[in-house]
Amino acid sequence: MVLGHYASAFLVRPHVPTAPFWLLLLTSNLSEFLWLVLALVGVEPTKPESILDATFNNLEVHMTYSHNVVPNLILGAAVFVIVQLIWKNLKFSLAAAFLTCLHVWSDFIVGFQHELMGPTSMKVGLNSYGRFPYLAIMIEWAFALVCLTYFVFTEKAKGRPVAKKRMVVLYSAFTIGILAWLPNAYTPLRKLLGL
Figure 1 (spheres, one colour):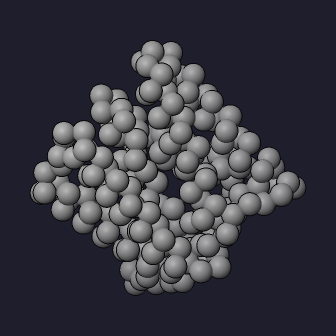
Figure 2 (cartoon, one colour):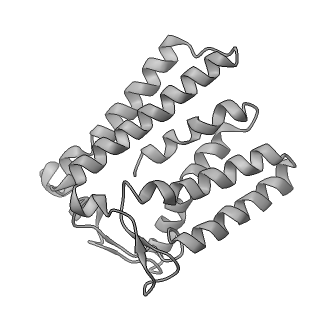
């Protein structure tokens, strides 16, 4: 997933309404940020090296420390401890740890395969970006819409209805942001941009 991970923050928002929303957004995509840092320093190499030449189905990623199952569980535990030390709020800590781990679990359906522990361990996931990228992007979009709909209905049930203008902005932002990647399923950005 690309933007769909951010939508997962809306799953937990109604249950921790006083948690800083930036914390929920950060932890929902923490594995991705870790991967980007590790890719830049050469620990988790990515091919092709330029994002301009990458497509969903030609991207080769090695996410040993950022996305593999066991390291992700360790990252989730570390997030739990850090958030608990700073905010001293069990619900915040559980929500942040859950979002950190949900990132990789979501990738099993929409994304690349990830190993359990390291490069030689068993791979899990559908590898939907490599096998059926158009459908993967559509599943990500549906996931985002489900997360937003859950947020809207749960907020209403808790007596905090979401304004219609805000709903339109949220649904539109995720729809445009996710579906805009459809052309990049098989065509690199360099060609799409005419560079």
